[in-house]
Amino acid sequence: MTKPDPNTAPIDPITSLLEDGLGDALPRIAEMLMNAAMCLERSAHLRAEPHQRTEARNGYANGFKPRTLNTSLGKLHLSVPQVRESSSPFQTSLLEKGSRSERALKAAIAEMYL
Image 1: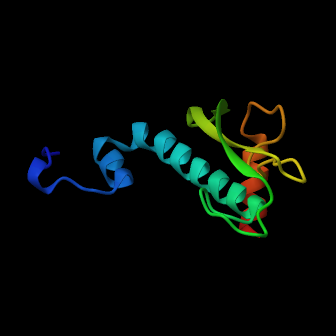
Image 2: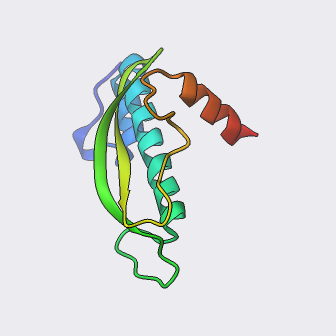
């Protein structure tokens, strides 16, 4: 495989990961997708985007907590979104509380598919 021309380097981070090789790319792509999905879940829970002020807002985004998840792809280093001052606790559907393996992830993916 030839090296890509730096002047025409892809802007999309997933494309650049795939160019480096599929074996190393899949865990990083899984991390990116899971982190994005958890951020979307947090926005839905809060009923507002980060830095958006609305009357319906249900708490505030409060950064991220690092978490490692063991999968068949390898260890995924995730950033789990945190919430403060919410009327109900925020728990992402992608991860079971206290789970460190992909069993909960498989169940969440199957649930999202349905």
